[in-house]
Image (tube, rainbow, N blue to C red; front, side, top):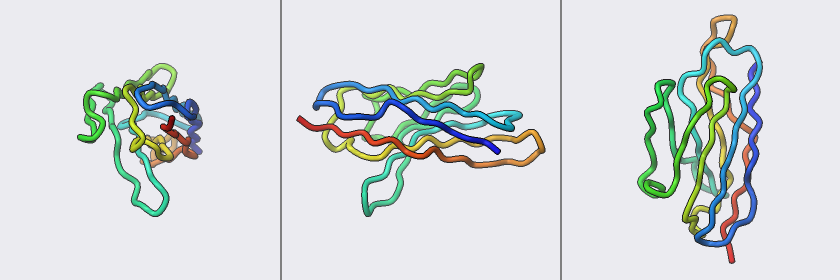
Length: 120
């Protein structure tokens, strides 16, 4: 099994910053893409940012220039640095990874979600 544990959400004022963290553990042989998604109540989950194993990153247009995704392959972690936060960034944020497990299976794994609230 593979588990993800997220941390770093919370309440922040508009214009402020937060850093989300996601740690992977379990029967992992290799981690491929790692990403962050977000979802508001009653809406579909949307991609925020994805980073490949080689370090190439892609962002949703709505967060370009404000958010940065980066990963620590040694410690199996992915981070989302969020700057210049806006009220519309308020959502539950989910970590997602694609892994090759030790027993040879390709798995997509989701974190439990962490709430980010941007409000004055």
